Each structure stands twice: as structure tokens, then as C-alpha cells.
Image 1 (cartoon, one colour):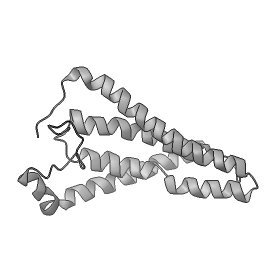
Image 2 (cartoon, helix red, strand yellow):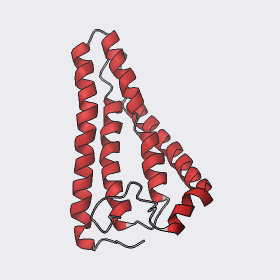
Image 3 (tube, helix red, strand yellow):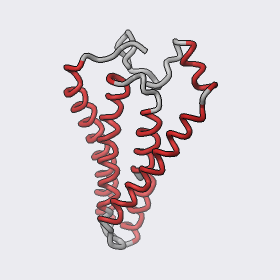
Image 4 (cartoon, one colour):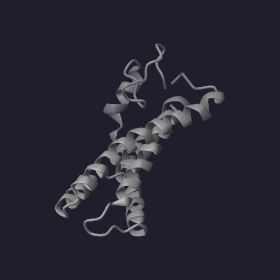
Length: 162
């Protein structure tokens, strides 16, 4: 949900200007932690599924890693528009899908290991391309996700109250 001045909140689930919402952080961490855990487990299973469908050759370009990172960034862009502008009252949606599922699905730590493997195989150029593709592809995908979701939701009449 955008603030009255049009700025995005630091945390779309908690607006510290409302005492009831400030208490949510202190009073109810367990539902949030459960949502993150469940989403993370499902995201990790989804990533394993992609890795199984698109196995990489040792020393080769890790297509599955690039795929999950770019698609995960696209989905997080879409999700942020939805949790801020469309469903701001669904406070467990961002922890479940954003932090949990997409955190378990994407693998930005593994992309560094994949780049290291390319370096070890003597493919420095491929390692550089791989690192750049993860970074630039992820940034572009997040922008596309936000842009598309904003265009789709624009006519819905955004929610602004909590």
C-alpha cells in the first residue's frame, strides 16, 4: 500500500504509523515464521524440480540457476505490486510467497558457485556472462514484473486503507 505521500512503505505488511500494526511485530511472530517456513519449503522443492528437469553439465553454463533467478525476480516484482496495491490486508502473503517461496526458489548464492565452477573449468568469459545475466536479467525481470502487474491492476481501483 502506498502512503498518502505516494511513497512505498519500508514494509508493506506493517505500517508503523498505526499502533495496532506496530504490535503485530511484537505480539504475533509465529504465524509469520510459519508462513515463511512453509513457503520456503515449497520454493526449495520447486527449485529442485527445475534443477531435475534441466540438469547442468559439470563446468557448463547453469541454465536452471539462471532460469530460477530470473523467473523468481519477475514473480517478486508482480508480488510486490499485489501485496502493496491490491491485497494490503493479506499480511501473510508477502512472508509466505516473497520471503518464503521465492526465497527458497531463487538461488543467488548458488549462482556464485556456478560461476566459480566455470572459472575452474577455464571459462572465465562464460563465468562473467553468467554473473551478468543473473544480475541484469534479475533486475530487468523485476522491473518487467512490477510494470506488468501495475498495468494489469491499474483499472482495478487500488486499495489505500489498512
